[in-house]
Amino acid sequence: MDTQTFLAIAGIIATVLLGIWAIAITIRYNRSVRITYAYDQAIALTDDITQNFPNLSIFYNGQLLSDNLVLLKGYLINTGKKDVTREMVEQQITILLPAEYEWMECKVVDSTPSLKATAIIHDKTHVAFDIGLWKSKEYMKFEALAKVPVIKIDAEHSASEQPAFRLRKVLSFSHRIADSEKIDETRVPRPGVRSGTSLSPLIRSISSTKFNIIMSLVMLVTGLGVWSAGQFLPVKALGYTLSTDGMQRSVAVELKHGKVILTDNTGYQKECSFAEFDAMSDKKIQIVKTRERSLKYAGITYCILAILMLIVSGLRGIRDRRLLSIITRNKT
Image (tube, rainbow, N blue to C red; front, side):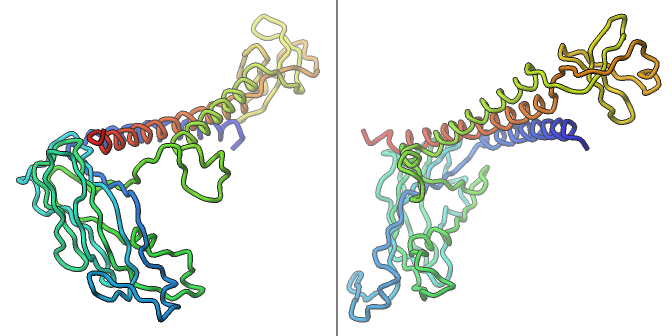
């Protein structure tokens, strides 16, 4: 398979995948009941290194703690188009922990004014939320204290595995609500902040969505440049001056799939058999100018992928603005 054919197939596949993805996104976002968990913050009130200081003791409610205590903050938001009534709830939204972890306390600290919601700890690994009528675009913020088991700092468990990170990693959600699916999980958008400490200050000052949009635009401009080079900039090739279709033409000659392909820099293209080419009169070999079609197809592929990235980034930006709007709507 030559480069031109490969790039053409890649462009078609990318276009088909884009269409399938767009249909899937449309179906997903039109779902009647859609619940989103937005992680806000996790703060380790104690640290793994505490185990190396036997004289250091930490108490909670008068009880000595030997495990790490982590404060988890997050939001539950009805991001769907349908209100959730009690009749629709067979099992309340529940946050589960593994057996070696333990919920110490959990409470709803903020919510949409009309929303009535409370947190209930059923046992040490299950905390549920009792919610009344939960209208579309309403939210509640919860804070929970959890004990995270101490791990030994060795080659298998590095010190970088902080308690807050481990707690976030093991959280899982369970519920049975009519017309709903798995709870979506995301982070509370923080405009102007990009996670990661290894990036430069300039990159960290750009939000993830904006950064992706900028990279998509760079890719789109690159694709347009590559396509323009293939479309308008002629390249030199070994060809012929010959008479064809009643005209004298300077053409590049390419053998492809047993056929002779004649092209020139005006966009002319003709396919003929080797015998037909051999029968053409007044053939003179020379250096001719033609267009590099592989560059044109590569540019088209780049543009399609850039458009796909722009759509994804745009949808993420819309989601982030929607979440921020819901959370901050009643705080002004």
